Amino acid sequence: MPRTRPADVDIVYFADCAARSFFDQVANKWSVMILTILTERPTRFNALMHRLEGITHKALTQALRRLERNGLIARRVMVTSPVAVEYSITDLGRTLQVPFGAVYDWAIHHLDDIEEAQRRYDARAGL
Image (cartoon, rainbow, N blue to C red; front, side, top):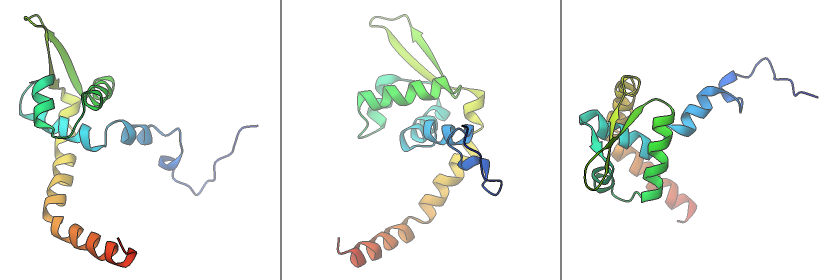
């Protein structure tokens, strides 16, 4: 028997909501950083690896595949020796520049506040 949804719950909170899938697929630290780098210029895989300190080969590959699948980046195989792959942001991906830029600016502006809140929380929690 199908489960009925409560009328007073916003659809965005349902497991099958496309927005939830978007957040899972795109709104994570690596995806945001990759898109930010690609707004500057098309970039090869190894250059992305070097710029994104701490990312693993596997994590970068997975993030790039998700972004490509969602239409936010394009992948181009370059016939060179050795073969290289270059990624570029799509027009759809560029539409995220303003909201992601706003979140980045907010984080930079409130970094001291966030760190202070973390210190207070850790002190209360005995961490």
